[in-house]
Length: 55
Image 1 (cartoon, rainbow, N blue to C red):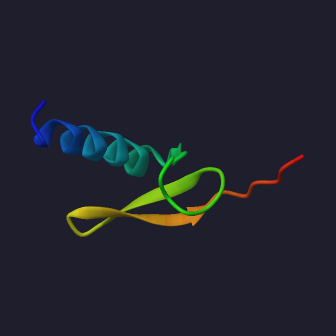
Image 2: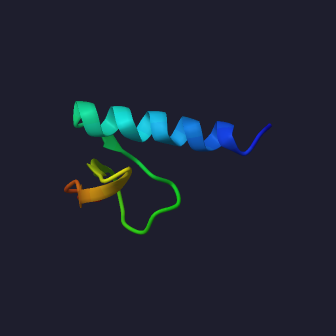
């Protein structure tokens, strides 16, 4: 698999999440639960973590 395929996949998923205001549940980021993604320049940034209460 070329190195560009995983990067393209991440950009596609994050682009959709930013455009549709969807929450993502990142496995390798600090924080707990889901995060809102926004566009920032040519890339993406986490806008904020969604409220999460463990029961």
